[in-house]
Image (cartoon, rainbow, N blue to C red; front, top):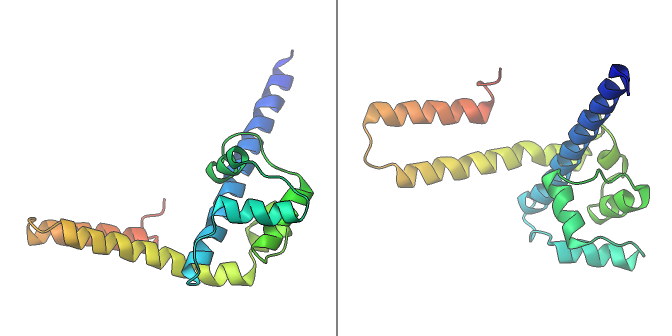
Length: 153
């Protein structure tokens, strides 16, 4: 095998890995949006039942690796469409780029981030009681920078 073939194969594996992580990010975001909208979190069982009703199959293991971004990349149009329909979004979102974020998902994204950030701040406030005011201010500044994205490279 030539160096060019090895490089091409490694690039293809890296692209696939990035695509796996991107699909996982999108699926986890959809699950978060459901909660942010005030609904009960969807379980694997909910999703698998809806897919089964459409004649599609999704094992618990496959769902787990789709959420974690590990395992083989899922590209089956019927399965991705079934999942998208379950979440009431265009199927292109699961196959496309961030430019394809449905308005409903996009509008909840900032809210989900804020909700998570507030949970971290609340937890820190409850558990960090015996620190100096300077240390507490430094921790608060770090959290604020992380929340607002001011720490981006």
